[in-house]
Length: 356
Ligand code: IPM
Ligand code: MG
Image (tube, rainbow, N blue to C red; front, top):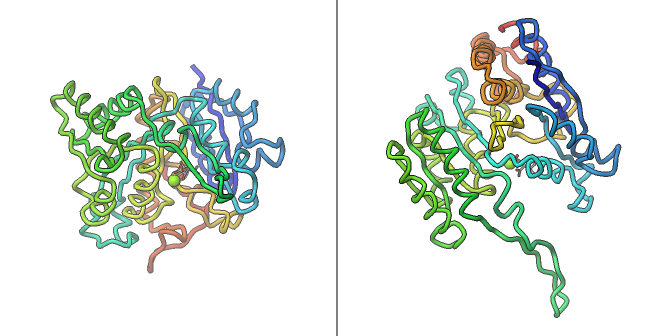
């Protein structure tokens, strides 16, 4: 049956990198992939046209779709807008509206890029880590929130970190199920020494683990986890953590792999419907110059094929093709090193298509 994909290019480099991912889908259609693509506006691009970063129509298209491919949102142009209509609200809004609570952010080092990492090759060689980030709760969404004026006239900003047991349970289940297909080790990251909310997080993780005899669950405070990620990242198999900690740790983990331009992500609901996006942002400083790395978005398509469209063989093909172009020495600027061939965004996309 033909599957529907909503494509939301967004802002900055979003449209360029998404265009390369579409080339991949078009190529796979030739081989029998049955998908219909419908485009929607999100982020600053949507705000400019409609006055909101998440128009009803975009939400409707996304709700009706089997999977969503998203580029990136945000840019200098919209930074002074009220927070309620900033591009980022579009992204947070769609995650929340579609209940995409499980964010999978794999950090895999392609051996060809061992030199591109700022860490020593022996520290990162063979790295294969999965960060499972809770995506629709925690301090990103907790109420109350805002900026208020105190009696003495001083302003005070406030947000609320809140997790229910049920939210922790469902993300624990995702992490444990993924670990079962990997090395069976889950490290839950919290700040249980200071924050009650994550004390409950830890207790709930431990309770959930009693249903998973085969899973080796450990715990780490987030400050230590940040240090361990750059000290000895290969100690980790699956990391599961809160929305904000996951946001921070996944950017950190991305640099282990050489470039944030390499890392895809999947955001899944309870039924494995998913939104797929590179973890890097809209990079407005390099937008429109054909120099952005499209591989994270292309690899996001591979994740879409694997997790939502049940086409693991096609996902494998994309991942192999990416490896092939790296073997060929092709590099966008962010992963370039001496002796390699520097290519632009569209050349990189074409090369992956050719390697398919
Ligand atoms: C990410 C991004 C977003 C987040 C921003 C753009 C709202 O940093 O996907 O990691 O903080 O979740
Ligand atoms: Mg982030």
